[in-house]
Image 1 (cartoon, rainbow, N blue to C red):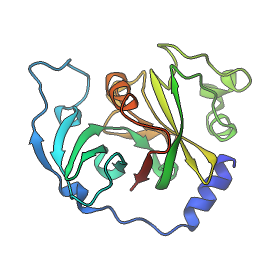
Image 2 (cartoon, helix red, strand yellow):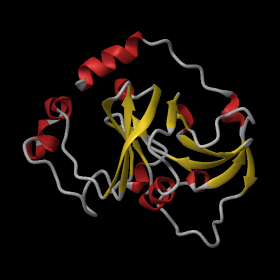
Image 3 (cartoon, rainbow, N blue to C red):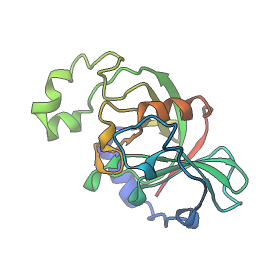
Length: 196
């Protein structure tokens, strides 16, 4: 399914109301004294939090307007990470599963990205960019699928960690490379993902 058809399909879906997971209570403060100093606000450091106990263990929940990704690690407990989300109409919302995982993924802009901003993306339209430290998908990528089809939405690392906490992407969910590596190592294929 191409990105335009996917966005049209999403527009027809009912808007998901953000769960009360946004009322999460901090269980453990970010370890600012021992953690690397990422160029992000401390509230976006990985933080153990308490959440509603009925959330499915192992699932991922992203609350876009708060820029948080919750990995539900046990009943009533989660690890919370900061993310960057899609800008404006490119913000992904809905349910998906992790259908593919890649270390140091290659990247190729979608035709819609090239059309929106040829000065940024046209040079990569044919061959893309191999994986590596300069690749915009960063160190790891988890590809989101719906009904067996790739949505073109990824949870991935970034070469721009200062974008965390902002709506700046073309729809994907960005994380600091260190954080996405930690999450990637704990996430299985088929993990359910809900983005509000």
